[in-house]
Image (cartoon, rainbow, N blue to C red):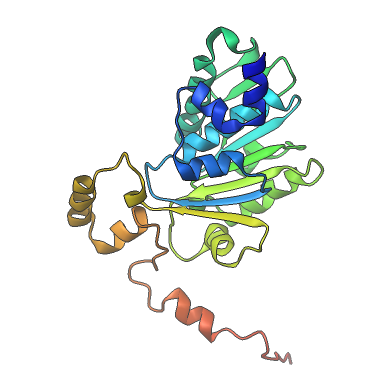
Length: 248
């Protein structure tokens, strides 16, 4: 009982109970009270893992919570939910019996639900009162879909986490990272900051992928699309809100 109470108060202790020792930045995410978090992280640095821990912690210790995990594709949704399910199994006899459990859904006796969905507007319409919304690979999620899911947080005053590797200087993920207000906790983690990725591997990736792809995938830089006639910075600099328009 004492351990369970301690885990309820400290998600990092809960993570360690699951056999996962978070990196410092992951511990910051787990312990943060921020309602809006954006994670700009290199591939394989652990952004999906920390989201899975936070999702399970929310469902277990905040009864009646609806946790939505949104990914661009069904395969990615399945992989993200698999992390949640694996952590749930690690609790063993200490975990409450599930009311329902499928490939993309976990329902608990305390009324909480964790649902992982592919990024299609037809599959997400109808959800409301979301306590935690985590958007994986957010840079590849369409803007229209993002606009459709945000209202789900309105009544519940829920939390929103965007996590992704950069994918060009466009879309809501880039705009949030660059122009999001002070309510956003921004955390950037490149591959060199991950102790599980060797420098030898990164040197090989640089030779194989080339500089531009490497900077995007592993250094978390927002790179203009190859072949773009004008860079995003040039286009943005050319735009003025003070120009009057006339109609005939």
